[in-house]
Image: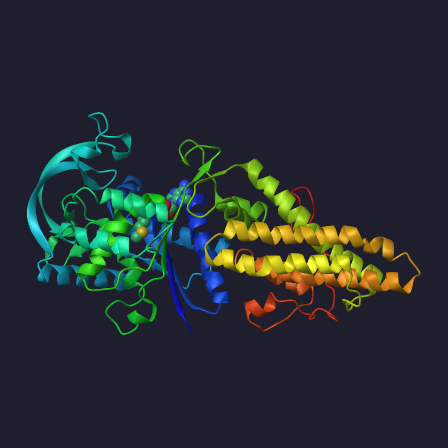
Length: 512
Ligand code: MSP
């Protein structure tokens, strides 16, 4: 079995889960589920990023210990994962011993090999961004607002020799086309690397920041939060033990566009190179969600609680919307109107009505099991041709992370089934006394059910609950692989038709 390791970014413990976090987890989950369905041995990691100044400050404001704040956040983010039906294999917290030990081990190793040195540093420091700034970060002679208050400070700190790896990194990016997806993001990184990079300050004096991992070679300092956080990707899978090679190198780090540069595309590959570990195969960089055209912000109320949508609609409805609406890598906008339009047209009407027709008409006209197909005329041939254009293309699109296009095709096939139903009109055929009409009626209902079975199979990585529920209602059970399950079959012939259910009720509609 091929191993496949995929991670999300680890979310800051001092914020609450929002739509952006939800999207990243769902996207990663869709890739993970898809790879599992394709037969890979998947390891899917997510977690939270618990150290740093902001956590220390937020905890102090509330008069609690930082770890209490992190415990609460860990619960909230775990709850987010479970409400979104995320199939992660692990959830890492950077305050766990398994993580802290690895960070310290790496620091010591780099220090022993002179990759880390101590120096006096005078510079402009942004407490909000938790980083030193350079004059070039100024816009029109001023520090941009995102940096908050900026003060000039002098202190001794430890530095990691980032700059000596700059040429190697440029060469690596140039020679590994797949390192950054989508490709246009690689160009941005190469552009950034045209200027000389500085060595990375990886320490913070304890008098300024206590909430961090102490440096093993100087306990008066804690580790810079990015140097600490990035290591989660290897500490979680047993760096330094014999288990490590099972999943490393990682196949995809899924991250938002804001954290590509410099942490994931510069610090992380260089850190790995310096400790002699293979660099990630690929960074899968997604865009950002805005809400009603504006940046998401809790303070202005422009904020979406993913759990509200799950409660009001269903987890699959939210997962479907997020994946159908955003093309991986591009930005997208969320609005109630867009959400309800998609929900009503694709889920309630196209898919929901098809299921409803199958579950209502089959028992009414054919009895409580699905009939066999005996007729194969133009309408049947056309529907089957539509399927053969769909199946392999959807799988191909999923392989290329074009999930929105894959879903579009799958739903276009669902609409073809509905058109076939209109064309054959089983409700009219059922009234006829003619034997041929009766057979056509049975064939139509059988083919509608069978086509629905294949279509919901395609939706499985995105809407696993829906697939399972529709399989159950169609009386379909199978141990076959996913690629087998989405193939045409007569497995439903003789299967018991389930009770009528409304899978995607319109808000005012009851479920039964
Ligand atoms: N803690 C760091 C990541 C460390 S990874 C070693 C961090 N945390 S975060 O909570 O701010 O962001 C977590 C992820 O959510 C990032 O990949 C970020 O891009 C993503 N998103 C945050 N807001 C977002 C949107 N509005 N839209 C889509 N994703 C966004 O950065």
